[in-house]
Length: 358
Image (cartoon, rainbow, N blue to C red; front, side, top):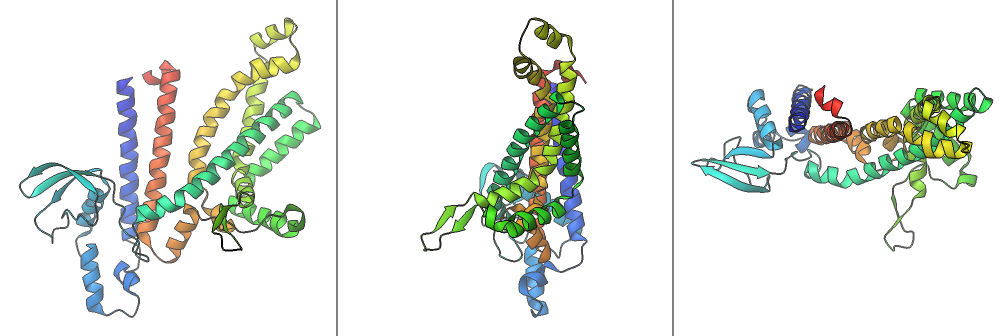
């Protein structure tokens, strides 16, 4: 088991290193001068040069890459004597704990440093910390709605196999998988928050918290969560519907289900107590993967509904060429995906010993 865990951790670290490398070189070969972005187009050449030197942009690209890896690594080696060194231990950048000092070098443990926004000067980690809870609430709500509706529709379709209800559920699930998220978001916002606004009472734009009209601060407004969660949950709902239907039909044809029926158990009890329990295993597995996908794929939905999550942060950062924010969000999402997949693999290894031998 220990070897299996170590191998999965090693693969996860390799994926993270590959993403960090790709993101760094991709955004460092794009046109545009970050120093000029910080100071504005009317800044003089001397000021631009000073800011470039402060950001380390005057160093060779490989040196910048090594510095970026050093910033991201929780365990890193720094120069504690020469302030002009690219690897100088700057207390204004890092919150660190010294592990070992060797002459001019210091080994520290620290939180990964994602650098600062070119536009606001805020730490990228602070920007992500403010936006991620909104994205997490949206993704989890979407997944719960998809699970509830998908399992229900899948069970109904399986029990009414080859009927008009079954065909209708399959048609809806196919449409749900084929609709692009951006188009679905616009269509749902227009239909339920514009055409049917008098009946639904829903807003086309909004956040989890709304400002009180009487100046009493903010209040929780769950109405604004309905349409984004419905839109984001369409694709997993469609997938889970078909997956539940297929898994339940397969289980209903097994011997132990026929034995339960032969004992005189009611159809409802056979389905709910025996068949559904076996059919939900692949559904739960799929839902775990969808959680990671929803966290990463909420960009378009958040932008259409102006939901103040990481999607809006990324789009605004791209619009202003705020590359540290874009890079930080991409790396954060990648870490989430790797961690969720790693936990899923470890769970498989615990439940099925054959997986650990593969």
